[in-house]
Length: 435
Image 1 (spheres, rainbow, N blue to C red):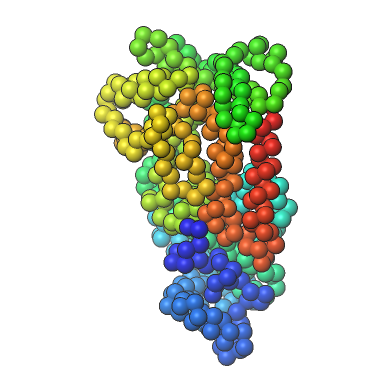
Image 2 (tube, rainbow, N blue to C red):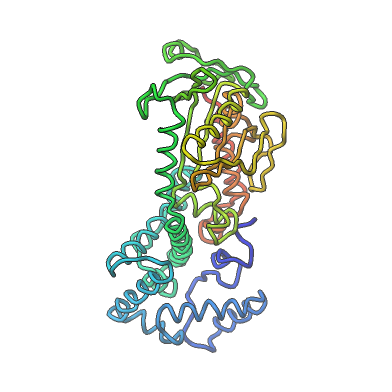
């Protein structure tokens, strides 16, 4: 479980480790029974040095010198305001945020919205059936100041769940800040705009207006046992309206663009993405990696679906020709072609080696873009095949990576993640196989 290695930032969230949120926060009395037990626990875990480093960081951030000073700060609202303003300035310098005091505060507060967005994404999609179980405590939901959140973790007036969620929010905010810094350094917004302009100016057919799409349906028949696509036909919306439901039958809408290659127009369904911050935070968690420059290598991406494997290769060659027209050479990196029988290898927890695709990274125009190209058949397998379907994959990677356990520990949320995973997979499977 990559997300809960002992040597990374995320270990601070582990409820079975020395930094667990207890029923009561640490006390200011050095020789109290609770502090003696905490000291023994830290020594047993071999985390003495790490504990001291984190303790010193907390003291420096809150501008205190001891746990007694921290307790005093909890009861001094005016002092908290001054400490909070100081903290915003320090964080602004740490993450290279430019602007005046108000602009820095606004930027840092936006990280709290990303942190909440991570939990809301899981509540609305992967863990939608358990949304009420993992709802954020109201007081934590509205809090955005890092100092306020940190003090809540030590405030005995707050319940254990609220104190855990305050700490979790701080951890997610730190990841969001690292991602934002990386995006500003790499100018990802400008690159995404340039990528869209490249596609519209050089790739898609000039006979169509920008954003003009042809609507078609894929009528497919699937194996009853594996739900592998056995037959697929492209039909019009009018024809789709007459199709009757049957076991193993699916109707899938595609909105397709066109590109001109080899003297003919070839239709292609395209999904272009720039990963939102919430998705990047989850990817860092899944990989157990704090550095977005290392873990997030697919910030820009395009998934395309064409009618045949021959057209997959035509599209790839056509892209390199379009890059030349745009005055840039294009090189292909990490090419994987499991459409032609090569095995697709992935180290990602929850990923399936059975997923056929043509995948590569294209380096061009100062960008590195991930391309995944499917045939109609492989796309339908990617969407619907048992143990391969994307919705199942989404569930598996959240649980198999340890992220679900890390963000929603049993001790606080009382969810047996193994049982939850099995129930969710069955639920998603039933939805996938509906007509």
